[in-house]
Image (cartoon, rainbow, N blue to C red; front, top):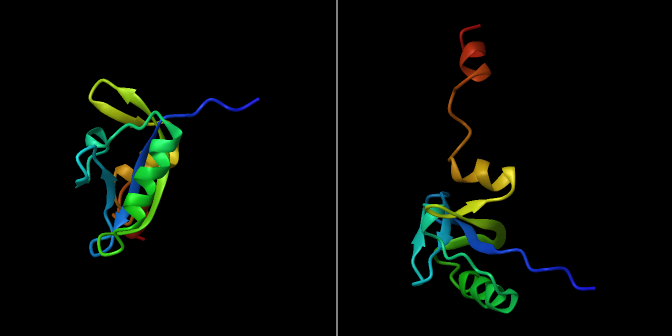
Length: 102
C-alpha cells in the first residue's frame, strides 16, 4: 500500500550568503518559510525541486522538507527544519554565553 504524500516546501541555502531560503509559488526565493509554496502533490513537488536544483547560481543543496499548513503559511513538522529557519547557531546564547566568561 502506498504511503500518503506529506505536504512539502522546497528549501535550500543561498549560494552567496548561506541563508536558508524557500521557493515561493511565483518562483521567488524568500527567507521566510511562511511565504513558501506548500506543495500537496508528489509529482508537482518533484517538478518544483528540479526547478530549484536548476538554479546553481542561487541555491545550494535544494531539497523537499515536510511541512503543514499553518495560520500564516507553511510551518515545519520536524525540529530540524524549525531549527534551520531560526538562523545560524553560532551566536553566543545560553550555555555558550555562560562558558565564554570562563
